[in-house]
Image (tube, rainbow, N blue to C red; front, side, top):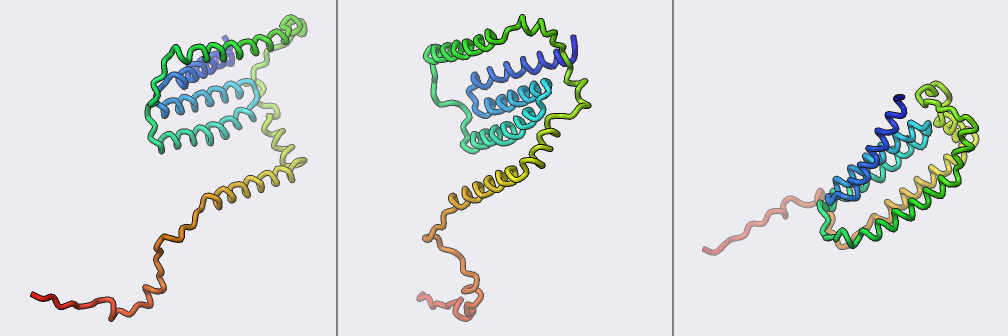
Length: 202
């Protein structure tokens, strides 16, 4: 068996098992950790197929931002186990109906994909490992982004910067009822009036 086929089977099985663990575990932190494992396996599959740009974007966006955000939110809220006791028979019809809808869509795609014509075209299986010396997708996309669409790329970065500053400004609330320290008044205070002696009657 070739190395790339063995890696494909391994990553596919790991992604399937991790996705089943995501929906079956009651601990929210463990579910998010298995969700990160699913994203890593799917990114490995995309890298194996030769779509390295999509693979790295999946790692950066989903694993590096969204899944870590989920993990921090779950840990900050201290949600360890689900407080809702769900019956298996109450969610089973919904799961079966969603499964049949997705399976019918997948079956329709395979019906439109005529395998007999693909066999007549004599498609050759090319290992991605042997193609690693060629020009990669990241180099092609990077050269296009930084040459032809450089103005739009910089403009999108500025829009994201303005959105980030706007979110920070909107979340900052200036409270007027808070007593703040005035350093200049404390420094200009006379030390003679700071201590006061009181005679106590015995």
